[in-house]
Length: 452
Image 1 (cartoon, rainbow, N blue to C red):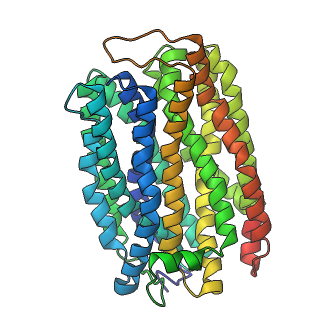
Image 2: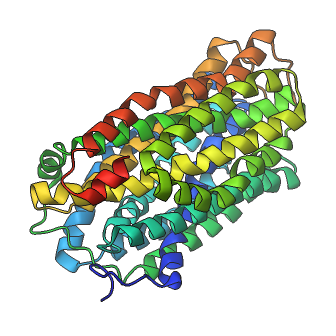
Image 3: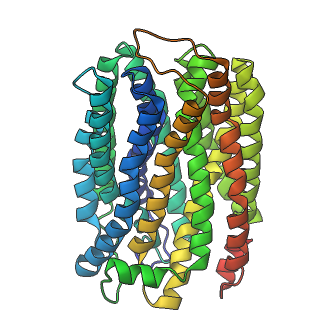
């Protein structure tokens, strides 16, 4: 048998066709968090507090929008049996506002803040139209948990490629074109086109996946009422949200650590390669360990190691020791692979387990809530880092008139890059333990195995 209910192995071309969309989602999830705050404060001269608000407010809209998109996606799936139209709409609409974020036409801080805020909101809206139905697809790609696991592994490898592309190529493109407004504008156009192409390719390549959330379409309120009894889902969501916030804070801090502590803004790309590069190798390793020792057990170990490596970065960054910083960043990358792979592998299982309770396999409703929390956390991360900068008296500047930062700002940006993410990772442990306890009471042996 084939797609949707089959036990036969999914062909690699179909797994790749699904996974390639994560190249695009990885780019969009990374570049604004990595570069937009720095672009506003150190190229356009926007104050740290205002720049932080610019990054948070559009994504706050996304938190409200994504559950609505999830309900729309489920209704579309009931009517047509596919989620393709919404996927394509998001993929086609996203590149233009994304490029515009980094192409402020007037050299004035106030105008730059308003322009970036409006274009970011438009880009986030387009991204939601793609991301929400895209994250819903793994629960529908096969009825076999092992095949869903394979699909998630391919997705995380492609996600890693997208993040690596974003973190390595985007800063390098901006720097190669002079590092000022023209450099960032060029970067926005090139990266936006690559991102849109990957997402459009996935939308077309996944048309074969049948979506049957049924038995009838639910509105947003009814979908929420149906979903809210899924306690394992919300425990998993709480853990993943705290981890996403930790990653977002760390990403926002990387350019500042490179520029002000390691004295080389170009090291941002090198640090990013060290962070994401090991993930491609680590994904199959974590998948093998999870099959042998249990997904949640490996998940907890990865979170603890991630937090320890983050904390160890504090003295290395403070001392400006480039080699130890890069080595610890690579260790973080190994743990980061697990923090991406394992929650996304557990998510489809929470949807399937809930279908027996409600009679609705409403993937879109759950992924709308999931992506709302994830995008909210990824947006809040730069805002948290900007708050740290503001509290510690960071001085904004433009590219032509750099300023010397006070010791309080140097200490603040170092803590924001290292200790704050470590603390957030530790905060994710209690909900993850709650998920393990709740999932252990699922009715089937398969789900009990996932919970160990």
